[in-house]
Amino acid sequence: MCGFVLWFTGLPAAGKTTIGEIVAPQLENRGCVVDVLDGDVMRTHFSKGLGYSKRDRDTNIAHIGWVASRLSRAGVAVVVSAISPYEEGRRYARSLVEIHASFVEVHVATPLEECARRDPKGLYVRAFAGELANFTGVSAPYEEPRAPELRLDTSGTTPMESATTVLARLEELNLVRAPG
Amino acid sequence: MCGFVLWFTGLPAAGKTTIGEIVAPQLENRGCVVDVLDGDVMRTHFSKGLGYSKRDRDTNIAHIGWVASRLSRAGVAVVVSAISPYEEGRRYARSLVEIHASFVEVHVATPLEECARRDPKGLYVRAFAGELANFTGVSAPYEEPRAPELRLDTSGTTPMESATTVLARLEELNLVRAPG
Image 1 (tube, rainbow over the protein chains, first blue to last red):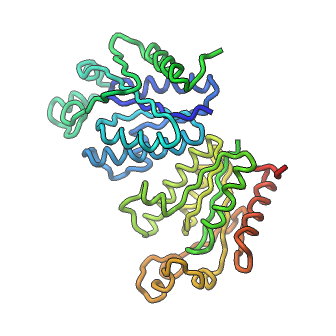
Image 2: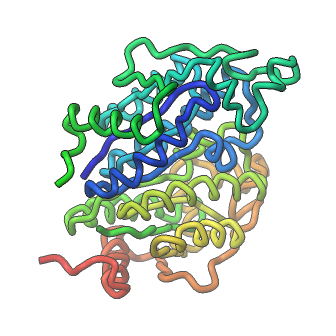
Image 3: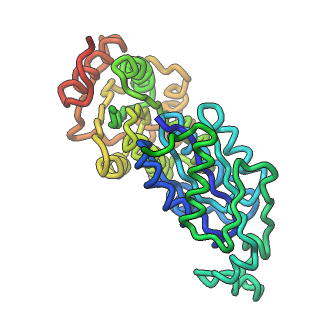
């Protein structure tokens, strides 16, 4: 039983999904049942018609938080990757989870310049050109977590190194055991 | 590990939730981690703004099916109570679940007359008076499951007896063990 929620928040292209995808199988190796919830994917299942206003974003985050809450209550290690730019939305998701299980907020604090340099989908270029309204970090705010359980600056760090840091933090919090 | 979905479908006031609430703790007694998803409750979490057209009902059922799929995949015994009046919606929910786990459809086949006699919320009276559009069984269709894993006629039967029948069927399907 590894019931907890590992919630990656950060700017677009910060590395949330990439790090989560490395951590997930490592959690399985340590005996956890794992599920991965991606903010974008969840939109296609539950949040059709939601846009990118603060309200709609927080609604999407509330949906993810609710599913994560049910899964973690059942003993699942839930890995969430979602921009989740608003403190209010993250706090609500945490409140749903903490009824039953631990909520581990990981701020993937890659600087904006580095995210914009990576720009895998070419969205930062369009946002800086003024073509995308509500693009987090450029035309919409990202409210940095004040007291996350872990803050990762991934510039100059490989995703594998970041994943190792995450696992060490989970051990420190007594949520997973050291391997072997 | 008891990963399966026990899906109660039937008319309003057929007894779906009542029977589910008796079955759920009995599954816990047999060592299952259990979660209960109620169609009406799920609407408040995920389906704000959805109405009672076929399309909106099927969307709500798809949401429930998706959550049930994730939970059952993680080894949870998921008890769903939802009118789920359309074959198409139920079939889609089943398809999501059966990727990972067993789907046990229980048609709570209480006759309309008996449901209308019970009428705990006074809704049948209003529906027969023409005040409620899209009320299943009166002003909206209920498509009976053709081949459910179990069909229960609860008239003349106590909810406890129905719950016992459900558990016996789950044993028969090798999804739970006999107690003791």
